[in-house]
Image (cartoon, rainbow, N blue to C red; front, top):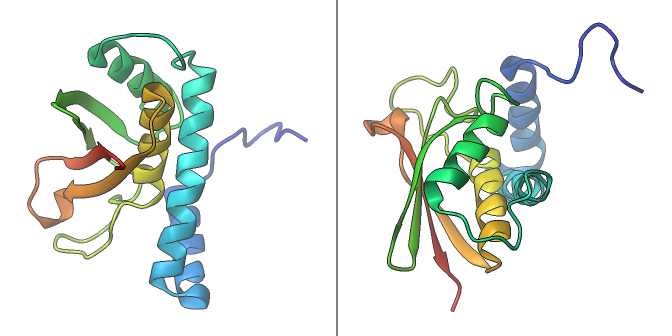
Length: 153
């Protein structure tokens, strides 16, 4: 059933309350694993919806399509600034991530769902299983939240 008045979105405040409740019930590590997995599933489905599976596009075009779907015109999960590939390493530069929203400077909060969503999309685009990590964080002095992906060997 669709929500006639409220539509498809809820607030960051409500979703982050769900996350902290999960952390209290399950612990930080188990919650992070679950949120990354959920994000990866969302990202894979998003890449399929955007028609990014099995085609050969440059990273700028892929970044534009993902930015549209996840940014101000879409679900508002994050802003995809750019995607660059350095050898086999793929770096995704993001800003205004859902996970960093309303967190104090210096917070130890890590991007989990957002990392997972980008991870799943990049895996779907490349057709490869990847290892992902959150390597730079705006909460701890970075200019972006940077997610890095490398092939599993």
